[in-house]
Image (cartoon, rainbow, N blue to C red; front, side, top):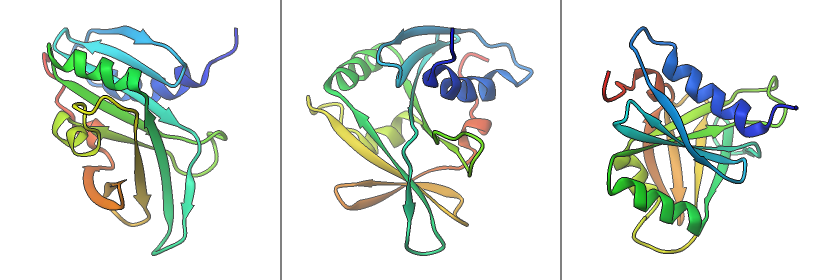
Length: 164
C-alpha cells in the first residue's frame, strides 16, 4: 500500500515529539479526509495536525512563502468539542508536493495563538494564511488583511509536552 500524504506530513510532526528522552504516549483519535488528524498525547492534550502542500511565493521583501489552511465547519465543530475537555494544540505543516525541494516548516500553535486566527465560536468554515519570510524568526498569519505574529520557527522543538 502506498504512503499517503497525511502519513508523511503528520510523521514529521510526530517525529519531532517522540525524539526526546521523555516518555510519551500517543494515540490517533480521528482522521477523515487525509489532510488532518487529531492525536491524544499523554492523555492530557489533543494535537490537531493539518498540512498544506500548495505554497505561494512571496514577492515582497526578502521573499518567502505562504500557505493557506482551510478549516471546514466539521473541523470547527470538532475543535470546539475537544477543547471543552482538554487543551488543543495545532501543528500546521507548511509543506510542498516535491518534498526534497525548498524549505518546509511546522507552524506550531498553542491554544492562545490558535484563538487569534480561528474563531471557534463562529459556526462557519474559516481559513488562515500562514507566512514564512526569509530572515524572520517567527511565522505570521494573515486574517482579513490583518497581520498577526505567531510562534517561532522551531516552537514545536521547545514544546514542553504536558504530562511528561
